[in-house]
Image (tube, rainbow, N blue to C red; front, side, top):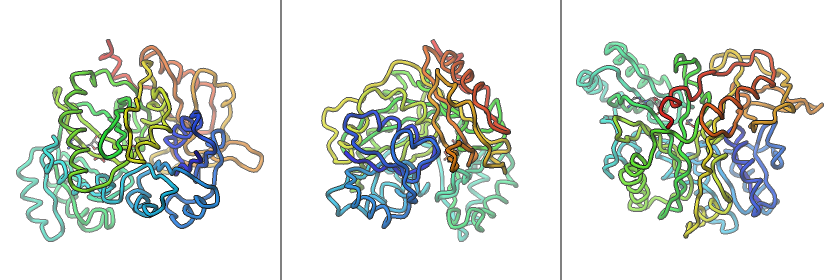
Length: 425
Ligand code: AMP
Ligand code: GLY
């Protein structure tokens, strides 16, 4: 098959790495890709949301399948755009399905309709601001306020103080996140450890990918600002057989069935952001794509032909294909630009990549100059992934590899996976 992968981050590098290993892959193109994806295919300078340009490229290059890495094209309806074209498969949900990520209000309503465990909530607009204040008063601190629409991962505020929460509600409804926060979901705070469960569905059947945990905050000990993700670990010790049985029965099956019942076409990845509340899984959020940086660990543990599985899912026929999990542990540690997630410099030369032998380095915010030197071009720069017999073993390899990689003002978290090591048997 000829495959077009959309996106430019570490997640897309890991997907490209996996796709390029499949015997079913003839040509792989990545739009727009980054400074590392050229190792797996051909970068093409097309924006993932420029549907007419994508359609032109698909025709000219006889593309058989589009794999959508990031949420934007899905929420903007790329699946529906190509719906009438039988010559190309799109791995992803229809626009209606993408609302699971594109609208928190829709996602919460969906979970209530299908009895899927999630935090108690209500949604408010500027017309119902006073009701919002009253709802906040009925909850205990901390208060969780979420912009309804996409806000580049920044639309969730968790606030300890009631007066501040009220002020933030007013600001959000007043346009703090533009149109995304014209509706705000307020929900009960849940306390527990989070994990990310990924499901590939054809709309009827599904397969569960290896479970991962990501580390979102910039600082060690989960402190400081939220980032796009500083590292990930798979498997997650507490996501054992008993926990996953509950996830399957209470969350995955009602989700896949609920989508079908509501007449929503969904042929792609579902990302369940879960929290383990005293052994009981609850849904924090849905995303309609793979996670970043979870994918940079999870792809190492997908044993078998992901292209075959994605093509079958996109065609609506997973059949009896198996998705096997590699028993080894996989981790990824993200190297970021100093200053990120605040302001940071770009264009620093990266050296030492050739000296890495024990890890797989996935590029994220990198580009190449005319002399083919690799330069930093974003906040999250490189994802350093490794296998191991345990979390500690895999992490030792990633940290050792990081020791060889140099760029100005590089930063990374030294405590990825530390909270899970204690839980490992
Ligand atoms: P979201 O964008 O919905 O994933 O929210 C971002 C982060 O906020 C999550 O990964 C959680 O760490 C946290 N969060 C969201 N909702 C809740 C909640 N109801 N209780 C506790 N933490 C939450
Ligand atoms: N790692 C969380 C996300 O991809 O949204």
